[in-house]
Each structure stands twice: as structure tokens, then as C-alpha cells.
Image (tube, rainbow, N blue to C red):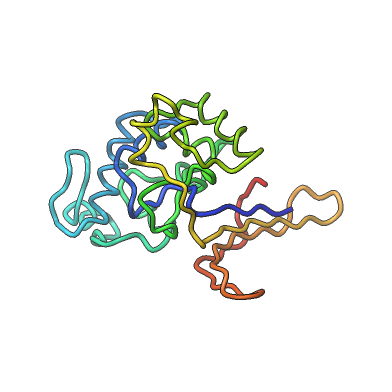
Length: 216
């Protein structure tokens, strides 16, 4: 089995607003206190100063850990780097007990501030102000028949709330998830790769990992 997703439909951790990241974490079931710590700490991790936000941390916290390190004060290069940030856990990042992890909805490769409404999954759409879970489902149903062009017509009165965070532009980066199974076995060989097409049958790899936990 194989699945292909456009990175433009995900939340770019390097360009996202705090609001979108906060909504995404809340929608995944985290409590508000944990969300406040994670969001502020993510923003502190990638900003260039040593001033921490209300719930965030900088070098003084990380250097006090048993295995000390400094805040990066630069953009994330991989999503796994989030595990270095205060408040983030493997369970939150990768998922646990049948729940999806936030890694499924994040990227470092779209390089866009706006989310492509034609590529975003329900969880990402629902994190956008003005888009309820019900409206997110309606958007997905509409675009299955035809790619959305008139965003304002679809969102109606909610357009003004959502418009700063959405767009129709895509990206040339795609994530491919593939799983191969032998016979009736339920476990198999799995890979996740993010690539940019470069000519006929040529790709530039931005990310590759195997094995991975994936659902296709």
C-alpha cells in the first residue's frame, strides 16, 4: 500500500502561527497547560533571542538537564528535533494507544505560512480559525469531486477568520508512505520519505525513515 501527501497541506513548524499550533494540539486531545508549555517552548526554540515566553524556556532550562544542551535559536531541520523541546514527548509526536501523533500534520518542507486547503487533512483544517470539524468534513467532500478554487464561496461568513491562514498554493514537496506485507502478515516493511521531483523519474530526498508506524 502507498499514500502520497502534499506538504503544503500540513502545518510548517517553522512558519506557523502560535494559534494554529495551539489549536492543532488541543484538537489532538492535549490539556491546555501542556499545550501552553509546548507552543511557547517551540517558539522559544526557534527564535533568535534568549528571552523566554510566559510558558516557554531557553538555555537556562536546557542546560540544567542531566544531559544539557542549548536551545537551537534557529529553524527546525527535522520534526524529530521537536523531542528536544520542553513538553514534547514521543507519545505526543508519534501517537500512542491508537491516537495519531502530531508528526502526521507537521512539516519543515512546505516553506509556506498559509495552508493549502486542497491538501490539508481534517485535523489541520479544524485547527484553522473559522473552520469547524463539520466544515472541514464538507471541504474534504467538495474537493474529492473537484479541486476548490473559490475559497470564499466555500467558507462563507467564516472566510474572514480563516483567510489569513489558508491558500490554494501548493508545494513541490511530497511525502510518500509505503508499506509492504508478506502474505497474511499484519506487520511489514514500512518507509516514509519526503521528496521533491527533479525531472523524469528523478527525486531529491529531503527526508527518509524506515521502519515507521504508518496508517495508509
